[in-house]
Length: 116
Image (cartoon, rainbow, N blue to C red; front, side, top):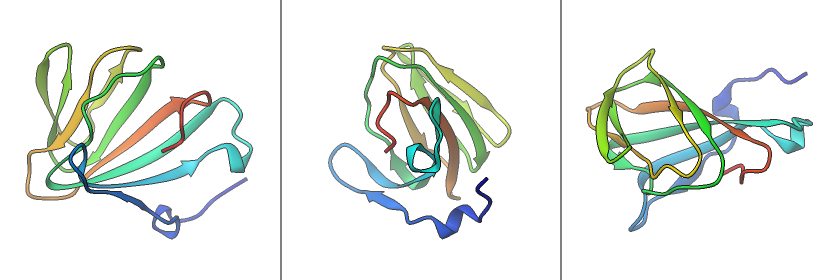
C-alpha cells in the first residue's frame, strides 16, 4: 500500500515550445507495483498547456481544480472542477489552462504508456 501527499512526489517540469507551465507527477506507477494502470497528476499554470499530441492508448482525466479547455475531436471544450474526460486512443488532444488559478488534472493511462 502507498499513502502519502502527492506534493511529496517530485514534479517533472515542462516548459518548451510544445508544453508550457506544466508540472507532472507519477502518483502510482510501475515502481509501486501497479501492473495495469498509471495514475498521474498534471498541474498547469495560468496560460500554460500540454503538447497537442495523440497516442495508441486511451486515457481518462478528472479535473480536480482550476478552469481550462480540452482539445479533442477538432474542438475545444471548457472544463472545470468535477468534470471527467475520456480521450479515445489515437485522438489528437491537448489541455490548456484558461483560468487564473492552477489547473490540476488527474490522468489515468494503461501500463503500456510512458508514465510521464
